[in-house]
Length: 558
Ligand code: NOJ
Picture 1 (cartoon, helix red, strand yellow):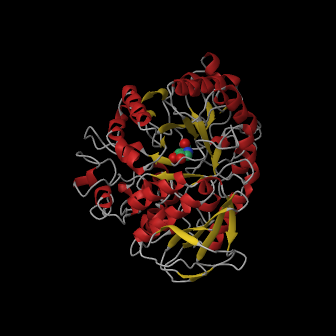
Picture 2: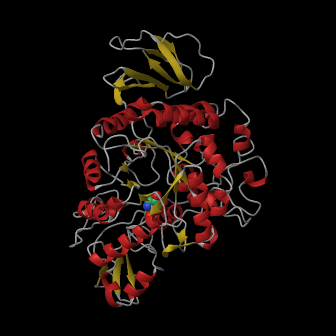
Picture 3: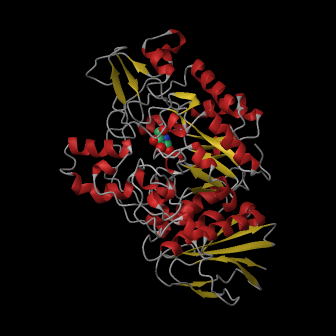
């Protein structure tokens, strides 16, 4: 770890969900060779790091976050030789490769669990087993996918814990042998020349050993017990000291419900960055998983600014608005119809001008939107399906129709439809039958079309990548809030070297036409526009700017 200039602070990360990226062998499922066929596209976009979602051998009940064998590639995605080719293809273009590392749980088909179930040797306590009445789970904890976090195993005649699907038993990190096995495996991947990891749900790995009941009124019972549990920092530090510290790898921890204080501690433990989700909670209601609340710019600005300031000294932010678990950012925070391109570019400007490492989720660089799912059988995501089934079974809702729109908005499948490469059949993703439906708007929204249009969202992303690479103040500059409470305009400065370098960022977050007024205490003798999503703005005066819908502007102030 290094608090000065560091490659991963200057990097732009591109996240790939392999099942939906590109399919080389026509079986309808994205694969590693398919990604290799697109490395020139990534190179052209200018990204520095690819984060690959899981490609390990797996029964795939949770998109591969249920690992059966950490050291093997799932047949759907190809072979280990294909992974090595992809790694080399990326490295040849100076793009690093980071793997998604799932260490909170495995699949129940993993060898460790199969042995643990039989109480075989040292594997006996690799998971959270509790003996007891088969009709009474050990406590009231609920899984992230809905329903109890415990299942009874007839074979071992005991309960086991699973914070996600019942086929994803939680590993028992209290057991030093478990940690040893995981550390060995992480080292094995580094030795295979991968450049870092995104650690899945890393702040769930420690649970209080007496397994106390959770608050019965909580939205997810038990979460105050297992999120940031008692020994989580000790474990992360051990992972760092015993493995990561020996290498120049980048690490980002996925941490739900993490506070700034916790994030600072994770940083001290040795994680380079964490994903905080506070800014993505602003539109979540508290009446169940499908509840939606209108968000306000105040909420987004507060959450963003809090983290910008909170991690100012030493620690480092990851900047993102979407991933494979979230709705498409343009459908959520922009306008996916009339102003699709403008708002996609405005949101991209947000991602690239804050202090931290930007993470771009595949397809966002062409402004992909949420598709429309009409029937339950169109969904592929087990978490979506399970939560709907549970709501129907418990009578929380009487018919699927009643929650159809909400499910359609929140489902994780929104981000998992195939990458739209062209207006060919299946958006050029596959010549086979796609494993999940293709968004119907692919004839208008696709890479090929965007490549041919100077003003496209894709070309705007490219310009932002170049700008970020060539503008140290964008990477290392301090974040200075302007217009603390404007309801439509989000504006800030980035400043470096005692303010001798200053950038002004102005983002109109809605479709109105507000006027931006530069605060009196910000001097602007001269300004130069660096980037904007309406090409034609002329003149240098930034004292007062009449903004257009979703307009984004970045100026250098002198
Ligand atoms: C977070 C991953 O992003 C999500 O897709 C997965 O379902 C859970 N962790 C469980 O591994």
